[in-house]
Length: 485
Image (tube, rainbow, N blue to C red; front, side, top):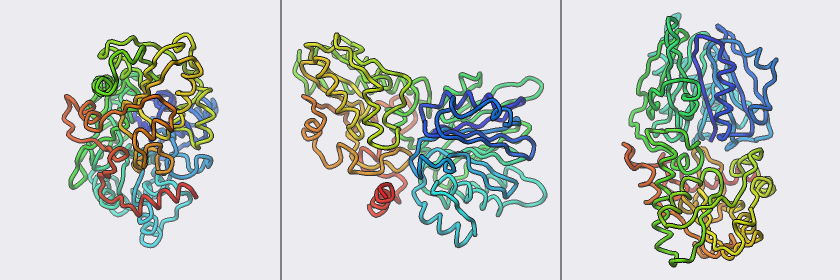
């Protein structure tokens, strides 16, 4: 899970991309990169760390041009410590292509062999983004006809790319001297939205980004989501064209975007993230009422920030007071997306502080958006008890995470998942809670897609059903071993 943005403008894009990446910072804190195009020249800056720390004035001054793209990295493949694995990735032919990518490819072994043995291309990192840009470059090279590049050639290249690549990918590519290309995998697992604003006599300016809040902040009109399997090409003059490039596209977006990953003020695939989280709270309240005796809970508390909408709905529907018992230090990153279990454990108490006045002598119901490794949840239960809670009921707005996630979220190892192979009473003991209540899978799906045209969600980490159809037990074991090695 990363954040990506691409802009075609009538004015310099360096500051625009920097501002957009700041709004997408919640999607990745390991590293960041920006690339811009000044005619046929590509300028690029990459660095580890967060956006506000990564770029200096001299860096921004060197990012010339009116087209560009940017990336914030959350490591799901490769080594977070290696700056060379940060995005964007560049290849020099054809034309010069630089690409950013959000997602995970699931046939990396096969693609690596094909690129080496058939396409004669060299890979210098373990990043699947480097794989993706090389596949794109190879397929575009096969399609180039004549002296110039036209959209049909670009779309034909994406059509053959879809035939080769498996997994989840929302990608933006800059083709030097020509234009900006954005495309999405045939299932639309990872989000990508298209925006436009008028530049007067100059014409239209365009933006493509992971979340709609980026568009709204910069004054762009949300045109639509890029469809699963679709490619959008915007040339240097601002002329936009698009084509469906997949043989059998189906929109099955990632459920975890709505549960946790996206900002609540975003709209994805026609669904308001905030409203989806409210509905998750409504459904969760019904389950809590079914399993909790009347009068057994004194207060409802969220784990800030992403569980707050669900917790408010739980409190309202159950008629129980809502309280903010945990204060969040906003200068500590999201523990779920921090690389390494030890770092996650160390940061929990730096991130949250329990206010004793809200806990002392009370039967507390704590609402979190999800429970993945259980590290944060266990620490929170301990903090509530230390603060004086009489009893702690822990609830999750998402179902138990029992299976690895291979489509762009860092959950590759089953042994790290607290719910893998455990029944709910066993998880309750592991977390140290008095009671533990999870959302039902069917309730989560219904709450998210209610009122939309979406009929199914990618829920593999909850159900073990991998929608791309090529994720086998052997592959899962390989991913796990590769992560541990």
